[in-house]
Length: 343
Image 1 (cartoon, rainbow, N blue to C red):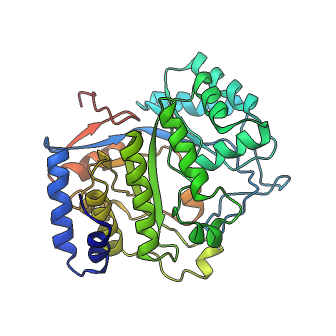
Image 2 (cartoon, one colour):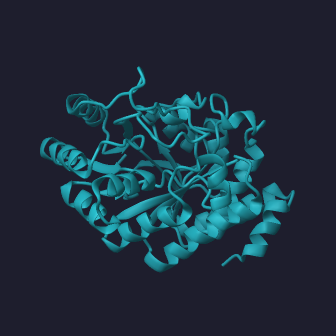
């Protein structure tokens, strides 16, 4: 297993191709069949009301703002039906940290969805979970257990950004701290739920701070085995207040190097996703030779990263063609990375 110092040396190295080849070798070992997966799901943002005002976010609105909303259940049901009609198997549902939505609201929503649809609910980032616990006066464990029992199937890795409190204080000082994020995922794993881990990089952090993030993820995976995948993506600066201070977004070279190092360093996590949403289809395709074995979702709907300035779009056929042209076999998967579909 790669040491921290070896990984830091890789970050400092100019040998991009050599790092990519090493990541590709590990990818072949972990995924010997030449298959690259993708998912058809939808991002449903149930509310944009948020109390945290993160400097990298252009999506949130204050409570009472004329553009603020909480989606009615009927609208959410309609979006889920559209997803199923397009061959979708899951829903990624996230929102702002609403000060008035207690756990009963989420329990009612999840139960209502499960009564109507057969669909995987991959919902609520760690900051949302901690917010629900806080406004409901519940322990974290009771909150996650109740959400699970009402229909929540797994938890996405959103809200991680960089798991280093110095970075978090600078870009999202009101949001949950590093330990809070870790506690949500550790508790979910202990309760039998799977989660994903993410990293938003390129927001002015050092490579040592990126390594702090990697270390925490690798150690928690060694402890619980609960992460299905690691998903690194680059900060989009265009419409954000943080963008005034971070003058340049991460380049394709920086993205590919970070992707490859994450594949090598996080060798105890089976799947690493190459992202097209922030970097575009071409860089995502190259990422499949830099350790990535998955390209994520066609994302029928996405509002958060696009609000920050991302402009990339893709259909299922776009993703399948991209995978084939890179020399792999495309295969649709479900949220838990089970690729049992025949196509």
